[in-house]
Amino acid sequence: MSDGILNFKGKFVIVTGATKGIGKSIAELYAYLGAKVLITGRSQMYDGSDDYIYHALDNSSVTSVNEFITHLNSYKKIDVFVNNAGINRINQIYDISSCDFNEVIDVNLKAPFYLCQAVAKKMMATGGKILNVASIWSVITREGRTSYICSKSGLAGLTRGLATDLAKYNILVNSISPGFIGTELTYQSLSKAEIDNLCNQVPIGRLASPSEIANHAIFMTSDLNTYMTGQNVIVDGGYTNV
View 1: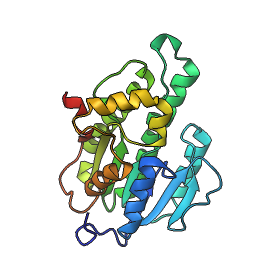
View 2: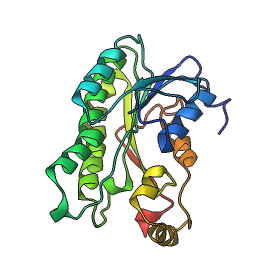
View 3: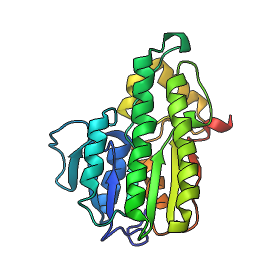
View 4: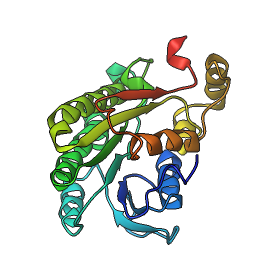
């Protein structure tokens, strides 16, 4: 991807859940392309790259989410906001506790709703881009993932609603739905045998790298995207087509 075409110099970007996996790759690419990048993670302390501003954010905590929203007021302008932080729980429907279900919904849907609401208010005067990281489970299903499917389907729906409400302010809102990516979350959720089996089912024959998702995220939030909004872009190596 050419930094001559995609230039984020002078832009302020926020990426939640960006200390590892897809979020980390997205943040790294924004920084490489010249953006000032704020990343979040659940830990209070951060010992990673000095290329970023770091702020603790725990999507499962109302107090933490509200504190972060207050912190956003210290910034005059937000150009890009990427909702990436998320969790997964694999349980059969009859084994899902109310605690587990509520946590998945809180982290993957409710916190993004309130964060997008706050960011949208900041963007209304100048426009901007919001990207929600959903999942292929927003459009298809698999055994044991009811909580996750509910949350990611809801996030895709939130994207459409935001896009409709915010288009008149030149705020473009989209979601990206990765397939099977070689992240920590994937390896925590699936056994090696399951991963090998998935690779055999994906037409491309492998898991995607986080950087491949980052490439799409960059385009969708760049100045090259001037008209696409309310869309859920599936990046899955063809998995949902077979």
